[in-house]
Image (cartoon, rainbow, N blue to C red; front, top):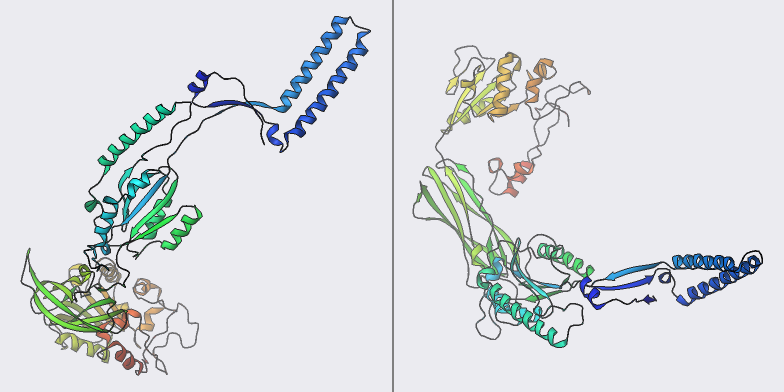
Length: 571
């Protein structure tokens, strides 16, 4: 309980300051029961007055009467000042600042709002976005909210954008002793001006709420509203949405923040309560480059919701691109998918053998039934370039081992590959199945940089001089040359421990033992086979498949016991 000591203030002063001025005793505010303080002050005052009277009596016999009264008066004034200082009087001016509360209306603008649901009453419902437009444009929702709050409408998909704002229709009046007639007149004027403002701020709702967003981030939108410091205190959030959410912050987590901030969130659902029916074609995956008459596979994923027990066809079309023009599309294949679950994703593959050279535009389409609610996601496109070119490969071998001979024959028979060989152990004048036979490793950029790949079978790197090693390192680092290396029983051990071959070792994708820590380190080969352990990329590489399907290929590789030829490395 506080006691206010109100001193007289003129009306003009109060009006000029724009607030209410008052004086307070700070000491009183420290006591829950002010009577206790007043009792203490009264007792102390009586005691001090008695002390002054006693001193006056004692000094009156020795001093003139006027001097004794003067000393007593001074003592009383000093003691009174001490009491006033103890009570702590202060002057305070109070002003009231009125800030209007605000209500935020969040409207979903993602592509799911374009769906037209079947009305339960058999009438015309339209799309979900049109229902949101009717709610804001034709209903009294905005007007009723403006009776008590400032109102802001925002649309959200992957981002939040402001669509319209309005001020409160009848703002609160200021402090003062204005007459009722004046207040009524001011409110009427304010209401009229706000109505004019509402008409001016009325947006084109069909454009402002256009459902074009590729994502629905409801949680992010709520978090943005709750963290926006602009405007007055947030009185509530109204969410107009079909309830979808496919990214960003969890909407329930954002709702918990709203509860902690004492901000009510009201959801206005639009759309059908029936489960969603949608067929969606995910990314179309095709190789970026292919050769004529090569067998390639184009893959895609088809996701289905609400199509359990249904069969759907997927078609693949192609257009040959010629400059800015494109040829007529051609149907390349048709595959059928059967869904046995309410929510399921199935793969689809199309084998191709492109014939014409040039860019090829591929487009996969779902032949969707009429009940598919989202026809916009029933297709996906990809581009592939058909090139007629040869890869230049250099084979370097310390000796004519079997793996070298096998790869040489395979590459020489491939019309897309030009193969040169450098057989380090062969005498001059030998005959090999190749396009060109080298007698030494290339020593100039023009010769080396024309190769796309180098395959080295147990090479004797000590035959390369410093310039050739630097050139090889530059070819790998700057020209993105592909270096494939194979260890062997003859030359690998001779250079692995050599300090002069540090640059060569750095080109290998493994780290060699610098010191022999085990008895078998540095020995090529093994008495027991080492099985192959494929990475995920290796498992998905078609050229490593030994069967038609990945599972059959994995089983075939599992029957392979492993390799005996290997060289120990770190790791």
